[in-house]
Image (cartoon, rainbow, N blue to C red; front, side):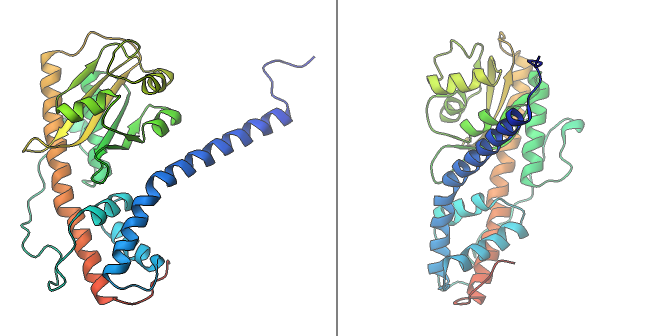
Amino acid sequence: MTDPGHCTGDEEAERDELQRLRAEARDLRARARVYPLISQAQGIVQERYRLPDADSAFVLMQRASQRFNIRMRTLADFVATVPGPDPREQLWFPRRLRQPEPDLRLEPEHRPDTHNRGGVLGAVLSQTLAVVGTGMGNVQVTDRAGRGLVLEKHTGLPVDFVEFFAYVGADGTACAQAARERVQVTVRDVETDPVFDEPARAAILAAGSRACHSVPLTTTSGRCVGMVSAHLDRTFQGLTKTQLKALDVVGADGGRWLAWHDSTVVVDALEHLHGVGRRMRGTRLRRQ
């Protein structure tokens, strides 16, 4: 008699193949989201520096991305949206002023080991989850090209959730509302709150989240540059004034740091790309 809890070899092989196909499908969907932006940036770089092919443009962008430890998508986003350099100038941004890296007022146990983008976003998420009292959450950053939110950091959330919310538009979610209104948004019960459209509600409930709280990451001028959200496995009555005030600090510090990173580290990468592009004008570059 076969043990109902035991998988046969054929069943296990089928399960492994299904998981492989799902992973492949997720990868293809992720590429489909990112490829158009990178392709657009490649075309701009190829034309700007008279490179012989798109692959040379990709190599130029890839080297700048790796040198300054920023995502290729982030660099492509800026290449595609920032006004191009004056062809008469050696520097892309000849009159920019460098600003010091802003402080992060995080608790010692949540301070990042390294002050790169991933480390800081991870620290912002860790501090937020500690304040709310949960182990599930994510950080998103604004998409300069599409005016939405792109998921960059997460913990405690299943793959299907991460895939579904890889990109969030202007409506249908609590984080979209928080970004639009630039205020903290509390959802006490995901199942009944009207802020969600039905597909988003179903995806959140399937992930085991029954309540959530979103905090906009804002600059000194009040512009939203990202979002940090905490998810809870239970409904709740909301946060105290002390908790909300603590999260205001997290949102302000995280937003100021992201704005600094964009205007300093990413711009350094653009300057590097421009300098190398000018020197290598017309040269064929190959991937290493």
